[in-house]
Image (cartoon, rainbow, N blue to C red):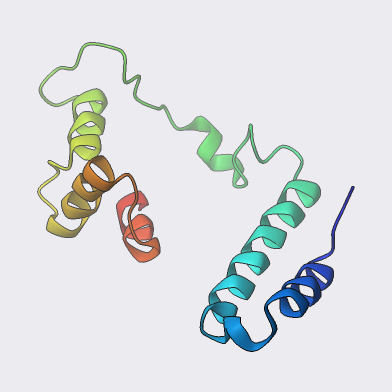
Length: 113
């Protein structure tokens, strides 16, 4: 079944009372992002398989399993994955992802762009 975000907030507030004030903002923000994702998949049912902007469909993606030449897209992809691009913030974020298994939200935005 479905549980509305309002119901989730009401039940958590009832269960925890005032003891969750410090984490309330983070929880509500994540709940909002979750609902935004659900809405996006409902509104754009092809989102998991096709880009939102049609011009991106023509982009050729590197195949990470192919052999890499020194200057082809595959070697650039591999450098990005390993944190060896030469852009310090991107490299630090990718290396953190390898070591810790996560990276902060803003670093994800930088590393993905």
